Length: 264
Image (tube, rainbow, N blue to C red):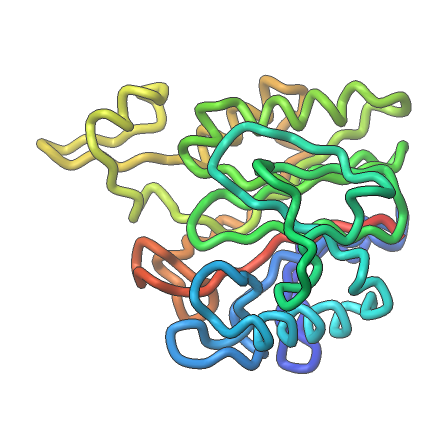
């Protein structure tokens, strides 16, 4: 089960039992414990939002050190995140892409989901309302992280990534962990966006429409072979908890918290 763990002022949500039994580490970060200032306060992990590149790299170092994988900083791998449906496998050549904002090697272009079977390659994606998802196959072992906004969700990025991991040889043990994201309580959308989703995930009162993006993602996971008993959802709305998480909807220009997965 996901537990909140705090070390050196940095709080993450992780599954200690999963790590002990499989060597797979997960971390859904909160926003405290970093060095960023102002609207990016304080553990902003994104280099594309207007924060100082040096502070972002410092935050990433602090995060990795706090979870005991500081020696893997050069192998940290990130993605461009364009709100699309591209899923990329991270191998030897891709490992370390986007690890440092200050260095010239960019994140993996065009991708919103990363997966790997390689040990010692932390995968990190960034969020400020979109649904945060980590998938694991302990029997392989393999891990994936997914960035699912409404565009990515309608592009099928959740089901595509789940099917990739489900298709790997080994025991049928695909599991999903869903981190903090904007809830249906706060995600007001227009009719053109409503039309892209099953009405079961939309609550409409007069001209106001609220979308349960997390519910839509859960349905995709169920259809992709991840039953409820192998899904965990923090159930935390980012827009309602800006003291702990970043929310673009609630704050405008702001930082990004992260979802990290690694096989050790």
